[in-house]
Image (cartoon, rainbow, N blue to C red; front, side, top):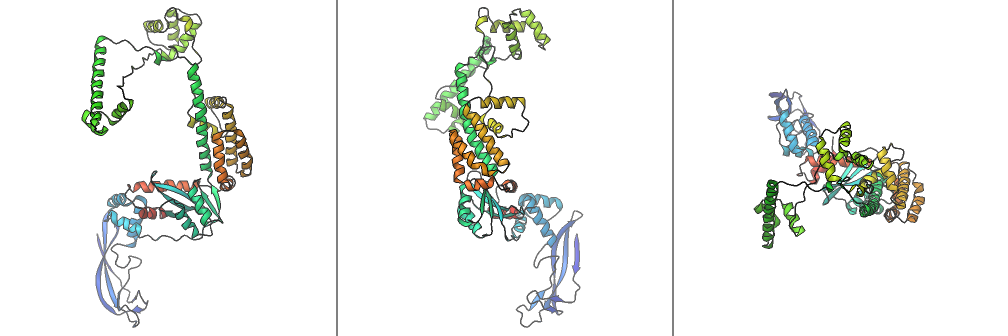
Length: 512
């Protein structure tokens, strides 16, 4: 779709000196692309006149009349199309933006979209009194950048190419009006603030404080849980009734035994071939491709140093879930298998009498009735990380009966665990109620507790005590900047790993 238009105003102003002129020199045609109309590509042909500049002191003798606010000088697309492409590019990126514009009927390329994004002017940072600073990763564990936001307006102030103290200090030195700096527990940002913003109050983020406490608490709980499990393993003896996995594997018929032996010989031949090729100096990847087994299997075989025999699978039975009831009835003196089968049927058992008889004869042979009393089954304890969440939760929250029992059992493991729970709850309460004035008393209790993990945590707090006290007292935190970092990660991933720092910075600073 083509549209022809021209300007009818009798005069135009010189863009250099601003003097009006009515003397026409010539005219020419400009072709502009505009936003599609009704799904059709819209092109505008504009007749543009050139005028003589009548100001003898002006360096420009001839000028063309301007099309503002329709288009910029020398532009090939209208301003509203440029704004649309910039909005699409900021929301999606170059490659995805090209797919969107194709659907909308816009003629453009991904490089044009990126060029329009890069042409956006960066708003200068004005007066800012409260900032939040945190890092993000370009490549996890390899390369990092820094994000700075205004805690009052929630705007992204700047994106820095690294997280070194020098770069952050240079940015802070340009803003001596900063009064509050919220940061994580890292030392780089703390050093930058001490160097370039000594007037500012540093705030250690409360989430990171609780996270650091959970890390040391996990180590302490892992130590006590391991000791408890080792003690239980020494005195606990499994019996056939307690653990179906301890039963003897089922007997195989001759055909199955022959097939099993053939498979074992095949695996043994492959193992010998792997060892021989490894001695010749071949890599594990080459051996895997040549023999046709996975790289992980070859690595495991070579690490073990011996042929790995396959362990027989434990025999499972439909009767397994009813074994506790059978054991109870057997110990009560009921040795009549017919009666036991009838009671099982009443409880939902659907198999035959023969299945009950064979299982009981195998598990409870005559002459072993008095030797089947098992030791108490050890309680199934949670993992250390799961236990940390129980320790950090508010005591006023609704705990399930299982969680309450687990927490009580954890505290009963050792007096050190119970003491650690009380200290953790005190710190968490201090953090939630902003009562940082109690920190000194809490640190004194930690020193007296002799819990080395908590003492290590306390030593870290002592090194950054002023910022920790501010974090436990003032309302500011890094929660806002963590959300901005999450948005930055989304923008970064939409670039498919091909966007450089300059483009990423533009998209973050102008994010919709």
